[in-house]
Length: 207
Image (cartoon, rainbow, N blue to C red; front, side, top):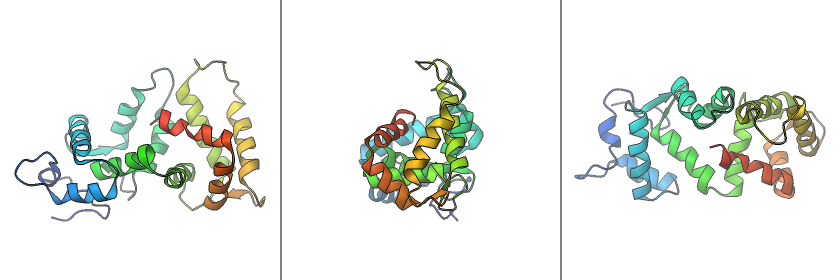
């Protein structure tokens, strides 16, 4: 049976291979995920049960992802941020998340090194995936986070807040002043700046 490049099973009949709690034999998928993630066998089995419960087909499209994610942020509009988040999880860019996509991303966010987390965050901000973050891209993400947090944040945020936030971040990050931020600039700035590092914790809070 063919499978897509990231190891996601095709929609038809891929479930048997991923039935992680299967008693008779552990599928190849589990050994592979144990090597690729920092989760234990029990954690992977538990995550898989939850994943299958929400997504019986084994695949999540963007609309389903937005619906699930929005439940956690009823006070705001999470749809735009969920769109960017979906793209960051969808490593093979095929428009659907399988369990591997989900669990590999989750492992980086929850248990990855600082370098891995920052690489993931950079990829999230780099909307068109060209290896650079522009001020416009950063503003898009920042606006989506403010929209998601909703109007009930204290103190109430002005509409200009996302742009001011971005202006400050971008000035610090764009070290050579060429109008784009490379991963090296992003990494160096984030690691040296406590304010930015604490802002980066937002990923752990909104995941």
